Structure formats: structure tokens, C-alpha cells
Image (cartoon, rainbow, N blue to C red; front, top):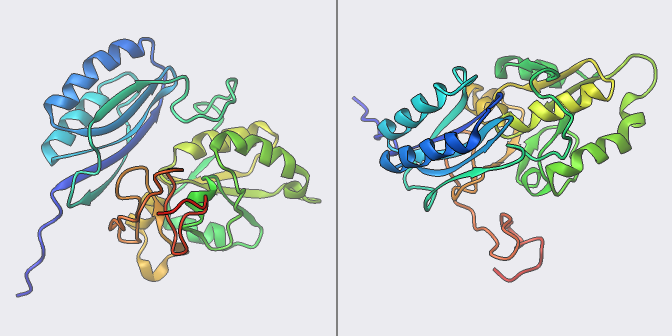
Length: 272
């Protein structure tokens, strides 16, 4: 009988939920001590529009925090992506109040009412393999540099705030002539696409889709033999990036610009 290796002890949960909170200060006041008591570390952002973050800890600790979060208004179906690692990827627990849980700088945008159609990972390959589909990576340039889906457009943005201006600048080219285009978008865990697809639909494009659960959900569910993913997926913790089986790469991070260091050093030119 072949023995299987024990699972890495640290459970990592990347999560988000768009909802309406009336008193985020009260939510923070209860949430931070709960996380600390459960020995969970990481970062959670709270805003009037919902919550977003990544936390890590024991299975029991993560379960306790998720149970609390799912009891919040509108969070019963909280979107969570799990992975495991051998070492705690965070130094402490932070709960912060923000204006947006993912900053796009479009205050009138409603990700609850205008989001694009969700596509399950099992159906994603067929969508992006269709030559009539325009595939757009909504992540930042340093994330795209580590990996992306084959054939996806890289906007080259340094920040998610830059995406609206990029899209408006490419609007005519993307629209083309004749039939309205089919646009498929993706990001790490799905949260940026909640806003990006709502924005694109508000710009007048109707046939807009996004990968449900993002790249991490795709890598978890789609066999590597069938993947359209190329390279690594950047994650916002000390693992830096993960491979197709969600194993951490522990790449070096530049101390100056806080970006992952490539094989030829950091793009900012700093000595590593």
C-alpha cells in the first residue's frame, strides 16, 4: 500500500462577499478579537459594500471565523477558496475599514446588480477557446507577468484603478464591427471581475462573462492535462505565487517595490 503524505497543517482561505453593511465599525469590533482568539492571521477589509481578504490558521480556527462571517448580513453564500501551506503566510491579523473592498474608483458602480454571467471552471475552456470570445485579464501587470490564460489580453495596468481608463481607451477596438463582442474576464479569486464585468456592462456591452471563483478555483477544479493556464498565479501573501496544484512557490519579493522577483531580477531595477 502506498502511503500518502499528510496535508500541510495551515489552511488558507481567500474570501469575499459583496453585500450591504450598515455598521462596519461594529463588525470590525467583533471580528478582530474573534480572529485573534482563533489564532487566525491575515487581512480582512470591510466596507459598506462588503468584505474581502485572506486568512490562515488551523482548520478549526478558520471554521470558527468563517461561521461568524457567514452569519453577517448577506454573507450566507460567502465565496471562499481554500489551499494549504506548511508555514503561516501572515505575521499578524489585520481588520481594516475601507471605502471599497477592491478599489476601482467608480463610486456609482453596482457590483450587486450589474455583474456579468458566471462561468464555472468546467465550462471555461470552451468559452475562451472560441475565437469569437475576447479574453481579458483584469489583474495588474506584475501578476500577469507570472502567468495567465493562453491568448488573454494583458491591459498592462499597474493598479485596478487603471482598468476603466484602459477599457474606455480600447472600447472602439474591442467593439469592432457588426455583432457585439463576447467578453470573458478573469482575476485571481473573482472579486475584481465582480466590478470589472459590472463596469463593462455599464459601458454598453451585454455579452460579458467571468470565471466563477477566479483562477484559484479553476486551478483547483480543472486537471492540469486539460488546463489553458500558463505559468504561476500570484497570491497576496508570503507564498507569493502558486503552481497549478496550488503548491506555493515562495518566490522572492522585492523589498523596494513589493513585487515578485523574476529570473532576471526585479523589474524596478533594485538589487535583490
